[in-house]
Length: 116
Length: 117
Image (cartoon, rainbow over the protein chains, first blue to last red):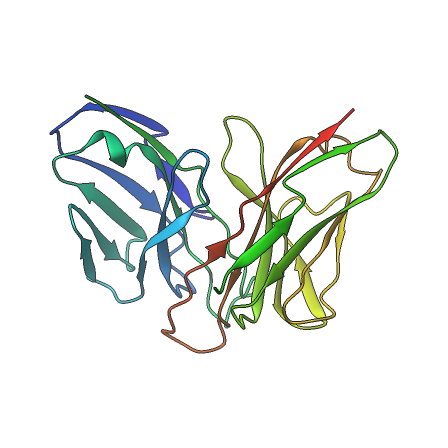
């Protein structure tokens, strides 16, 4: 993996369903993995910043896991609600040892729509 | 309140004109970033700066220029060389990435929508 990639591109679920999506990133020169939620007409807001392999973070019904050795992170939403509808972005800035130090690039995002 | 302020919210430009988008932060962050979003696409990095008086090209820097003369300010100029400048522009900032394991989450402004008329 050379760049940050997210899948699926979009997702439609029914209220109450649990869902998950994936962020893949370069495993070399790993520094951190960020997840953001971007609601319509608002600015992106950080959900999680993860730095340690095996790390798991949780905020309410949303949780995330991190595997830095294989270069992926999963975001889970349990019991989706219509207010969870948003674009979910991930980013993985490289560490100081890389040539792109400090470069905060994002994946294409996963657009989640939760239907009542 | 601490935050990032982008101005203006909407901007109209005639073809061939340069325009400058403002981004100011009072979070005492070292790092600042400019992104562009086009319909149906994600955020693409234009320029970034990790420290005052230093900045780097992102993935789509052609037709843009920046300056970082002050820690709190990172203005973006869209030049006439940018072939398709109509887009939504987002500015962000974060603490320095010089310190390992520091919480480096980015904070975003409200964005500027630029339209070429």
